[in-house]
Image (cartoon, rainbow, N blue to C red; front, top):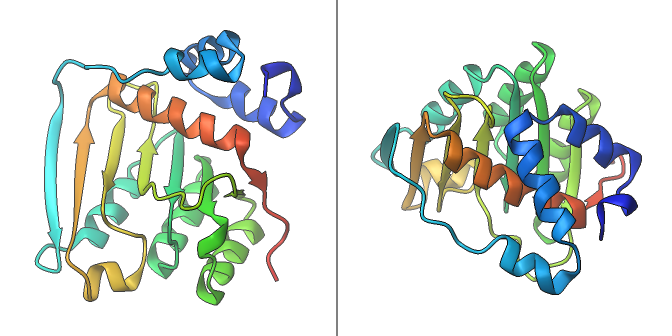
Amino acid sequence: MSLRRCTGTRLRLLAALPGAVLALCLSLWAAAPAQAFESAVAPQILPAQGTLEAAFAPWDDIEARLLDALSKARRQILVQAYIFTSKPLTRALIAAHERGVDVRVLLDAGQLSQAGKERQAMLQAAGIEVALETTYKNAHNKVIVIDAGMDDATVITGSYNFSWSAQNQNAENILIARRNAPLAARYASNWMRHFKDAELAAAAK
């Protein structure tokens, strides 16, 4: 899909992106045909900077670390979730949205359990845009990008699904990369690549 074929909603999202991330997204889409797109987003080696925090469930309280990171967001939160059923995380995203943070959520359409649909409905009722990934057998990303385009941007990723089970029943890990703007821009551009292929979710019932 070229930039010219984006929906009005997608264009509004682009306009809301910080300048550095927007420039990267536009440069990727300008490359255009699908064949060229792969080379345009080839893996990159980025310089080490900022701080890294590793945490491991069930020994470490990963959910508390996620809630703390979300509470500090100032401009934008981009979520990519394979499973999203956590009530505390849902409430934290809604709280961020209510204080003016741009919150966007991508979910794997094939993993929407009843609890997942209820969390989707909570997000949408609060005015948060939710899109569903249907292109892949599994949209297995578990990523949160906070304040991409800012010097103190944060990327959170790992095996941890955003669920009660991930914290209380599973062996999981996350890595929190703080103050790494180039890394956050890279993850934000990948989020946009997935968003442009996703389907905006109808109101959950």
